[in-house]
Length: 424
Image: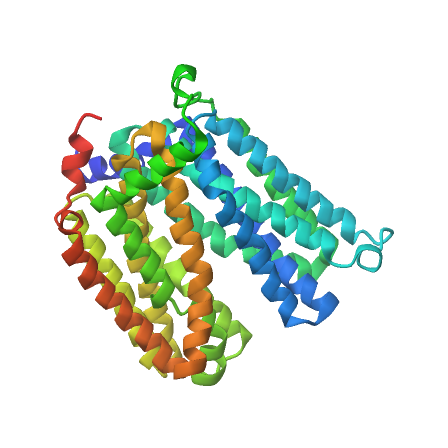
């Protein structure tokens, strides 16, 4: 067999697992549905209220339950059947999307009778469910994929998410514009139903922890997960890179202002700018499927986070649309490498019985940094000006890379090839 055919076989190896195929389809449908719902709710609420503050409260209503429940969810994810947890939690999403369909039916007259409360109830359900699902997804993936395929699985999982992140909002906006609010919310319900059916198709690997080992108190169990991350320099360093990279380095929240005031383009141009990082991430996922980042992994991770910061600086300095698009595309390329590496690290460095709690800690890093990053971008732009604020954020990201490489030398020297070959 030739080397090229070996490479192809390795790139698609994890897709040979029926459980992983169901998992990928589930993640695609649930990501599409969640992002479709987000787009439709945004347009719907603004058309009802014409109040930008209402849109601000949507994000707050979602992130508070998500972050609040994550650590508690991680405790139970490490004790109960992870497939069943995902199945039951996904039922909440089905319930919330069905509520929106009924709310918008012409005969119900939901806005006049109930105001926007049903919409915010659904948003709350979505945030609560995301807080449960994020650690559950990571933990279940570790059970259905063998150790030597973790990097391959992380690559496909990341590419799958990026495709859904482009597809979901596009479908939601198209259905809302062409067919109206009820068909748009109905499509969200159908996508959630498809996700529910896909997760139901996975053969359950059972609970990760035998009943006799489940007597530990919840608070002590949660503290144990936090201590595990704190005492593991590789995981802590990688999560720190992620948190500060998103907190300071991103410019997504400011893209409308750049599109209008710097690049002088309209909504269509903004749409392509928003899609550019996802396009870059999808392209890099193809490369990583054939060339997984398992050698000099720590150095590669630090380099890619630095590349992300440099891409943001170049984007801020650009005055040409094509160059700005390319800079955002490259930010997606660099970010995808770091996403795949971080996903693989959590799987390889965490015992199966603790993956829920560690993934919960990681989800708090991600969740808080995304929301705070958008707030930081707006605040910095107001104080410093639009372009200087993004340059400043990119420079902070570069400083964080230098600091992490000094504080966590184990991360800098890390090679996943050696870790994968070890017997767990």
